[in-house]
Length: 588
Ligand SMILES: [Zn+2]
Image (tube, rainbow, N blue to C red; front, side):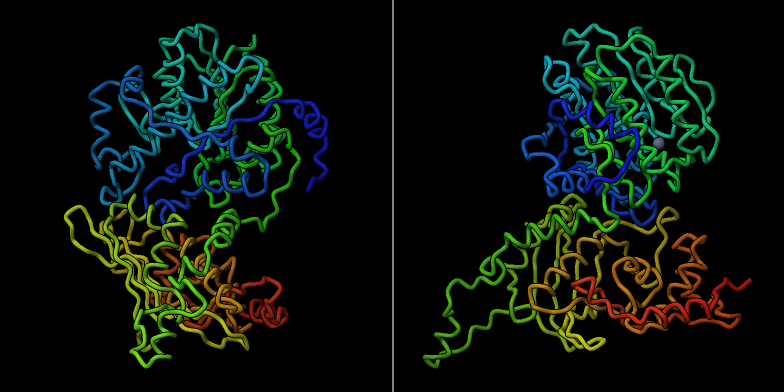
């Protein structure tokens, strides 16, 4: 759907004649650090979401999605010293660069992610240079690691993909002028360090933080909270100062310039970011250019990057509906492909157990979850949804899936082995069909996603109820449970959050079945919003929260996520009345 987008319409027409955009992406772009989401509010699935959104909405064809190879060490060594590259094979060094506890780092998968992203920036640069009038712009869905210097990393940047790409094309014979237009909210300190010997490159940057002088770069530090108009004026001035158009450009279309970003300090709207990207695309018309996402430290950062893709696809005004959820789109597509036979190991209409029963033999005792899914069917499905692969990247292997029955419902457990071959419980789920709010739902009596290789630390304190850190895969788990509920003809999923942070995680998709309880929860979200989630849930667990002046104990009531959103039959008036009646505060 198109929305009026003012002058962007004119630009859209200009861009429509553009050649096909190449989008570089690899399923291993998801950084295998389980604490990023919980501790830093980062969406580790940003690249996946954009790729899935573009594909599922048919904004690109599958062959426009290009899969990179890992960059080789010979190419990396054009920029980075051997001692520094060697140091990256150490969990401590990587943990420092990404701001996580070393126990959260699996060295090989993380290095693989970094090398794939860098490889894509290099291949994209080669591709746009060699395109000869065809594709001139490419978008890599991970990269723009501008804080990595020649012999140091930091700020989530281990190697400098832009500097490596420029060094590789130079070695291959490219001698033209290059621009680096760095529109991430932070300064390009590492890029400057890497490229200072290259006299034919211009670095222009707009930042929201002052990290001191950057000799050799055209850097403008904008005031905190800087809005669209001031930013776009500064961008026009920068593009004017950049002078004669280059023969190759790298654009870091930072997602952290948006208002509300945890680290970015600037205050652009998403529409303002589209205008930013459109201005740069216009300035670089017919210039081979590689676009990179840089930072973006919000759950919704994928929408900004998808917006960049839409601008480059000549669709700058296309609106992304607030309800669009690429994970739901993607998983629904996989679910359609998984047949009953895949999930149940049932081949024919008349099964072996039917025959056994008919002829008086013993019944097949294959354990089944909800009388349907076999262990092998579940393992196959978890593989198809990418769940097992993500567990592997977190350092587990040789999985075992077990299904049995408990007093509280059917149980699924997934075990995996660590490097020392110790087997750990990773996933435990107990579910039953149950009536909630007058509807039959899949009731989740118990769900735990455990990451026993990782340790709690000051960087990652334990949440109430956790014995080991989590896997960072709750989104996938809840989406899969909804697919199970739909397949079983149920009206939704329900669970009873024992802690505030569990209800918080489900706040957008679920609601308490009891309207008054939902009202109190919404009031709590409203009144505790300034508090980091970690502190809010600790305070509630410790009884340090007051409701209308009196001590408040967390109420573990049923929360429901309906399979059909229009099914939500909450009495909105009752919710509102309670929300307005109560106020929460921390005990002084
Ligand atoms: Zn940044």
